[in-house]
Image (cartoon, rainbow, N blue to C red; front, side, top):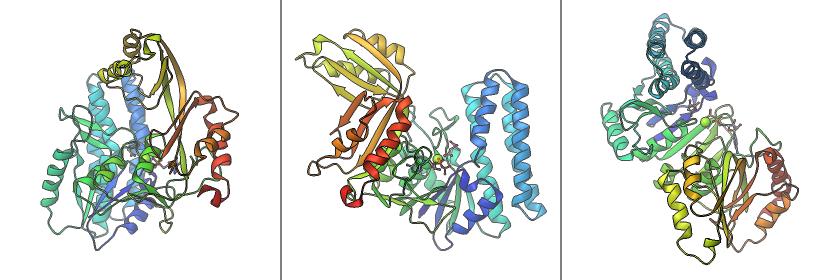
Length: 444
Ligand code: ADP
Ligand code: ASP
Ligand code: MG
């Protein structure tokens, strides 16, 4: 079984849906995971925002715009009237579910119902398109098997069992279509895997069915060595190890959801990043294979907060760091980077939810300083001790930028630097010039 996930742009129009259909295998079983058509989730977010502010008229007008857009999609996508009629029924149901949220007090639960409609639309429309073209396919309802725990982690055992139950209902079928991104939470309510979550769905499903391969089809020819939205002259990377890809995804490479590599890695399932606009391109293969260039890629993650705790009690004391970490554990806030000196420790978080409580708790240990609007620039590659000079090359490239923290040696494949977000673009460009634009033999 193969998993093929298509992102928003890949299914963004009737024409693109037609192109995706051409890419599907005919002789082997596949689960196709679809995102919402491009722009839809953003539009649904806006509807939710208007409702949250009590602007029902605005929400209604945005909903009408979206509905009109989908009527146009239907007109473009199907040739036959019966298909158009069925698709109109799909629209009627989806938009009724959105409008039902207008009549009750707005809550996070309503917001999540609204956000789920993009994937419910794209998958149903795509399945009807297969039907019109006489291709047998099965729509697997993600809300029947995709579930998260109270800690918002995928409930792998539940997912495996319930997905298998769904698949077992259709022996001999080859083409299954399901929604990315959406799930149910521990209370059984509709929820989601956070923005960009369809990649995560694909990987979780891949792990659940022990797929032979997980393909992530998008609008670019694989993972590039730098953010192509910010830097010119980036290039695709043919191969990455799971660890390298996980670091890049976690530290901001938008092409992959931050958590999407782990389920594939745990079951050693290769992940391929491919381009729907250029299907013949090699793309990127992510696997357990290690090696290759010293420097592979750089990514950047914004919205970082640095916390510095300064205390003379830290001097020669053991147990100090444990007490500090316990505070973050208590408030369920993961730490990304950490550096220490004899009398101070600096660490970073990206979730500000409990910052006031964390700050108050840390003040027991010493002076606490908070810096916001920071960015982690994360250089990924193979930095074994026997390949010296890597850190020097990165820091040298950043010589004109003030560096707030440097982290090297935590793993063999990551050098992370904390800078002010105002310096992010300059940092990525400087690293491109100073680290990646050198001759190939210098990378080796
Ligand atoms: P999809 O809708 O298919 O999930 P995304 O927009 O989430 O697609 O991800 C693909 C986009 O990620 C690319 O168009 C590109 O602009 C952006 N991107 C950011 N960093 C990278 C990178 N290092 N390599 C490739 N693409 C990247
Ligand atoms: N549609 C969702 C989003 O836009 C999930 C995804 O595309 O992966 O975030
Ligand atoms: Mg995405």
